Image (cartoon, rainbow, N blue to C red; front, side, top):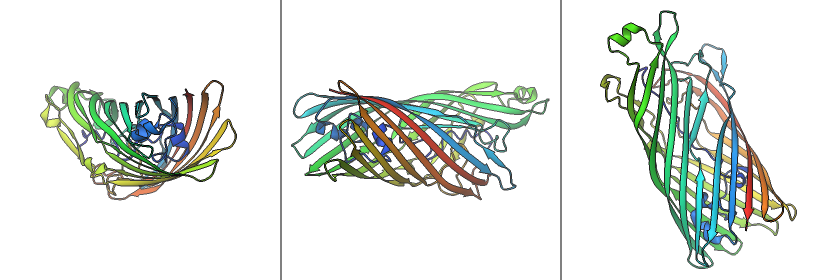
Length: 398
């Protein structure tokens, strides 16, 4: 059982930092067409834009997690930051058709604990990085309705590291490190409608399966006797897959006044497609393993607003609630997961000749989560996590 590489953690690898406007409004933008980032949030909104846009930016995520074991003693997640980025562009082809391009990182994971911490046989470090490329076409049916769709090309890379409960002659633990990468395909589609001062958007992002066909498993600091008798290789290849779930979003936007616009979003994520992770070692079938996750579908509700403070300055704020898809019995320290409240603020400041600079800050408060009967790794305890996010972006309107 100690060979199970628990690569991912439900909920923890969906990232809602895909634009400065979206982040600062609590993720609530599906019912609005604000700039080229609508290519990702709701591709139908592209044909409702009255200008061409180019948006580029990045976000810095700073997680803070404390773990209290059943026998006392608090341990902290290593102080480490992770970054995401995005690039969007749109071009109005004619009065009906608009082309858009989205390049971003909507799924990812990064946790790192001290090498000698109490849960080192479960995880020491886990990483997932993805890149989504989505060319899109939107068609305006009339002044009220539009539709949009685009294929999604995805590539991803993973890294996982943990201690093995086998001791070398010097009394130190063995080590397992897994690295791999895979590619997958999906699509993004949406519908957008305007009724006076109210706008409604519905979008669907499909499931994407990343197949890892040629992953590398490296075993180190293993006693030579266990290598010679075939219990462990020095290194070998493995196969696995990562399922990135579908997301359905419904957004309702409203122009509240000449200066104030608001949006309410409902998101449904189909996490139930992630039942377990299976790992196949073609040259060492005795190492083949399966690790259950039993994820459940989850929802989120988000509310955001934008205020035109001056001719050059826009202010934004938002709040959201995200339900965790991880059931009791399957919580672990790769990415401590719990229901969370998200608060965001941000602004856009217009420069000269169509350029604007955007900034945002978000705070995610994950409720305290107590795991008492873990069904996979028998690691029980209480987790408390926060995530701080800083974002900076540049926009060009032409």
